[in-house]
Amino acid sequence: MRKKRDIIFYKQYFTKFFAEQPILVREKIAYVFKIVRTVEKIPRKFLKHLADTEGLYEIRIEVNSNAYRIFCCFDKGKLVVLFNAFQKKAQKTDKKEIRKALKLKDEYFKNKK
View 1 (cartoon, rainbow, N blue to C red):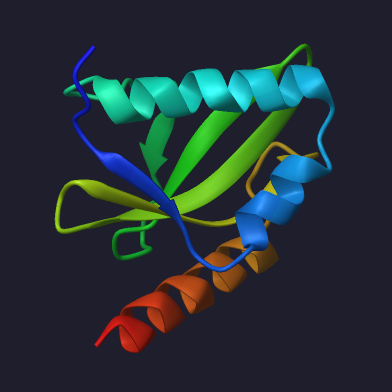
View 2: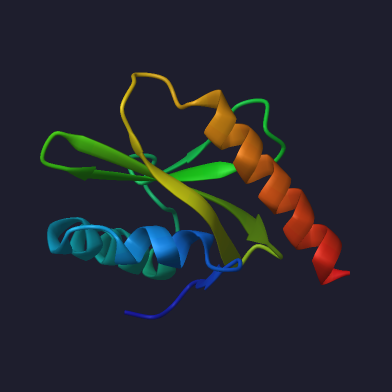
């Protein structure tokens, strides 16, 4: 499969989360990342835009009955920048986690200039 986009990690927010997860969760994350890297149009099942967030997306991971979310955004159309991640415990995504992701996204673009 040909790569459509790169995935980069902003600081160590995501990598720290990833290292703490059980092997099954890490394998599922790797599988979803492969999809994100290689398919032209990423299925909504795996990537969803968060309404009212100016370009913030969540990568969606399901393992058994557990849901995980990884916040990201696109940079120049080809780059997915990964920020904070967490295990989702409620029906709605925690607003505190969304605020944190938006802050990290702003920080990323500010530092990039």
